[in-house]
Amino acid sequence: MGGNSPCASCKLLRRRCAKECIFAPYFPSDDPHKFAIVHKVFGASNISKMLQELPVHQRADAVSSLVYEANARARDPVYGCVGAITYLQNQVSQLQMQLAVAQAEILCIQMHQDQHALANNMTTDPLLLMEEDENTFFGLQNNLPHHLLNFSTSSNSTNHVINYDSFKKESLYGHDMVS
Image 1 (tube, rainbow, N blue to C red):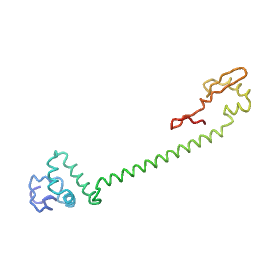
Image 2: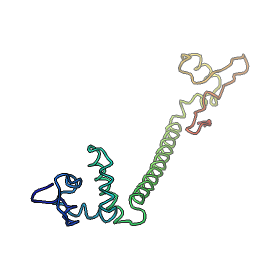
Image 3: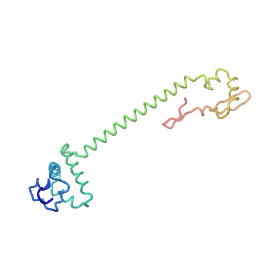
Image 4: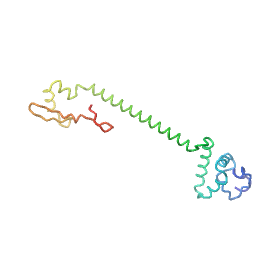
């Protein structure tokens, strides 16, 4: 910084702040704690070497990372940032599990509601109509347009066979569920 006010690092190290001081732009005199914590964890010499090896446009980000790591080391001397990252990853994992459980519950509720809706509409179900009166059912089938029918039939004069595969629904897990 040069002149009247030395930077926080030069003040802490009790040395004269030169005009080309590598610490001055990143450790201002009004924030002495910032350099003190970084110095305690990494040492002034190591910080100076790191900053000199970096291009000028990356130095501010490096100082920010050093300050973050130093603060993390002060809170957790053994794990530092890794402890914080691990904690957050575990939290994300737990939240993902909770989300999966909630989505499964929603799916179960929707399936239950769909089954309830089907139970309420049983009188319009073609299979029930067939059970009630086969002749009426097949008469109704012949009057409906083919695209409204959800199943295929083969018609003999005596046997009417329904292909139940068209009633199957595919589940999320890849196997068929008959509703």
